[in-house]
Length: 370
Ligand SMILES: [Zn+2]
Image (cartoon, rainbow, N blue to C red; front, side, top):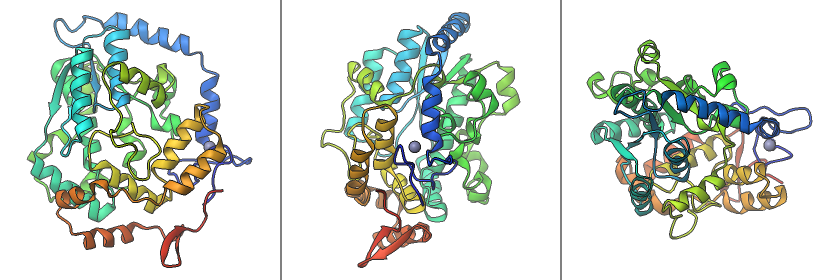
């Protein structure tokens, strides 16, 4: 395990590559992004929005997946206010919403003046799937990612909206495998193939244990049918420089509040992923598998946007990364119907012994960032 010399990302991140100088592909992506003429790209999006505005009769011009987080508020703001499209927000109803999550989502709908469609999948099915994904692949949020993609695509088809607007292309931001269509025009059509889904296929995971009738919102509509409807899916990050901190500023204007009690354990920021309670431990598994999680990701964003020096990031990562996100542990255990002992056993199953070892009885990374 080695770390980028410019940011603090390790080479264990799936899809990342280091050059001969020891600089990661995410840092190289940032350099490439600086050369982009963003005005030209924004104008391209404006021209496209002019074309589709009102083309769906009284219906929606555009669908935006939202959570009530800062990034989704920014997306909804850009499409409804800046590009003046009739925008429908689609949210996957969170199972365990935080107080901030409820307030922020309500504030967004009220203050931005957009409609919101809530996709509420059957709780029993989702619970069963989350438990399988937690115990068998150490990736409890796996199924939800599918609902977000499939649910949004189905909503766009149902309402005949000609445009779906996603946030950032993870492959572009981090230098992974970028689809040709994404590179040329910010198309998000290959979203379902991105890095989130590499671990296992959905069918392999379920092994027929969930009835097909329960899976409508987990399965994306047929690609061909989707294409025939001429629905365009794009990444907003292709047309505008993607920066969560900038989005925070916009979101606050529409009533967004950061986490009242400050950052969660292991976090540097108090405004990142604060809308629901189950995600934090999901991200913790990334630490066990790949040796990095929230503090690394959050510091890297600051470095890439010129707001933090590497030395400060190293200090923060070293002081924060071993903090277990205990805040929502009890609710996490109860939701997944596992005891703490079973959970700890599960943690150990996913701990990567190539990068972890015990020091004085405590698990530590073999190669600490410095
Ligand atoms: Zn880097």
